Length: 129
Image 1 (cartoon, rainbow, N blue to C red):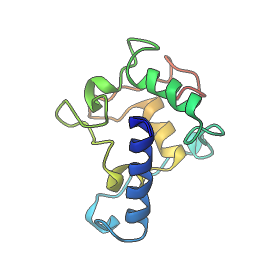
Image 2 (cartoon, rainbow, N blue to C red; image 1 turned 45 degrees about the vertical axis):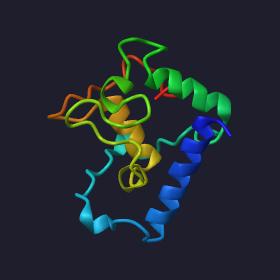
Image 3 (cartoon, rainbow, N blue to C red; image 1 turned 90 degrees about the vertical axis):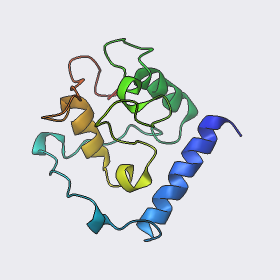
Image 4 (cartoon, helix red, strand yellow; image 1 turned 90 degrees about the horizontal axis):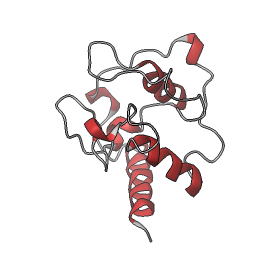
């Protein structure tokens, strides 16, 4: 099993534990901002969470290999472990399992106000986001 497959498997297991109440409860985390209506119907493209080719393409975007202006790993780390202050730990299922596809799309497209996370709407296509 490749390292990526192990990571995806661990994330899936963490999400399952979180959703079943095996980890910290949602009450321990701050509420999420509501997704704006313009983004409410956004969904991950078919296979986006499971297709090896789609995952590899997403990894290239995440690591800044597609466009240097879009490099999520410069703050969130190559494996999702934050390398800059304030960046979310994308390995933590307590965080990432809370986000719907629409929420992910909105935040990657528009960024997060009052943080260093910039939006990528003008740099990536909807499918790439």
